[in-house]
Image (cartoon, rainbow, N blue to C red; front, side, top):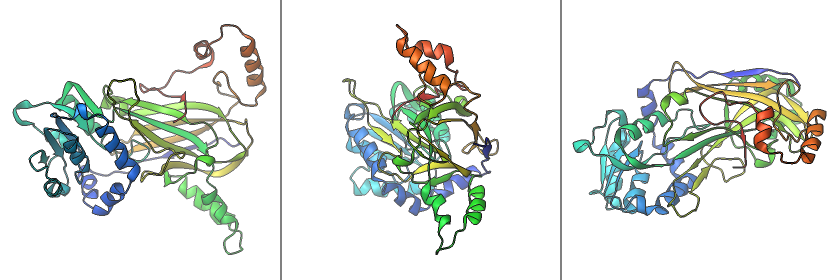
Length: 380
C-alpha cells in the first residue's frame, strides 16, 4: 500500500461574506427540513424544561428563530435571539405568529458586539453552530465568547459536548461508476477525477456498511470549559484492523453532540451525523484517496489526521491526512489486526493475570498531540 499525504487548504472568506451566505432562505429551508437536527434540539430542550422555565436564554446565531421558539415554548422568561444577518428581520414575525413577541428579543448584531441590559447574565446558551466535519465554517468561537461574557457561572450550554469521529471507508458509488459508462470503461478518466477530488473534502452520504473499521474519536470538545485557543489544531494517529473485506478508498469524518440532562442519572439527547444513523443535511465529509486498496478483514490500517485553523480565515480549517506504514507505528493493546506481533501480544495478554487496559496504554499508547482528547476507540 503506497503511503501518501493529502493536504486540504482552506480558502479565504471574510466575515461579511459568511453572514451574507446565510441570507439565502434556501439554506435555512434545507436545515429546517433536517428532522434529525430539529428533533434533537427540541427533545433536548423539552426534556430539560427545568433549565428553561422562567429563565433567561441566549440563542446565538438564531437564524429563522426556531430554537428561540422552542426555548419560549419551554417556559423561558426572556430569549435573546442574536442574529447578525438580515434574517433578524424575520424572527419577530415568527415570534408574533407563535404568540411569543413578549418573550423573544431580537439582537441584530454579532454576539461579540452584544451588550445585555444592565449587565444581565443568561442561564442557558443555545446554538446550532456546527459546520461540516464539525469545525468547518462553524461559529464555535462566537459561542464561546457568549459563554465567557454573558452566561452565569452555573449556566448550561446546549449542546455541551461535541465529538469528531473518523473511520476508513469504501465509496463504491464514486469509484465504480467509471467501470461502466454506457458500456465503456473509463477508469483513466476516473483516476484523474479522483485526483482532483482528493484535494478537498467531499460532502457525501456514506453507508454505515461501507466503514472499514470501528469509529475512532479525533477530539472531544467540552463546551463548558474549552477555549478558542484549543481549537487552533486537533490531531491524532490511529491504527485499527479492518472489520471486514473491502476497498480502502477514503477517510470518513462526522460528528456527534451531547446535550445536558436533568441530574437523574439519564443520558442527554445525542445528535449524531454518523453513517450508521439517519441522514442529516451535514452528511459526512470524506477525504478521497486517489487510488483504492483492497483490504482483508484484520488488515491493519494506519493514518494520521490533522486539522488546523486557516491563517486566512478563522472559520476554515486545513486538513492533512497521511497514510502511515502499519509496520512502523505503535499499535494499541490489544490490537486485533493479523500482524504476527499483535497476535503474539494478544495471546500473552490473555494469559497475563492482572493485565489492564491502563497498563497497556503505559506500554504502547501514545499521548494526544493537542489539548482535546483524541484517539479513543468507541462506538457512536
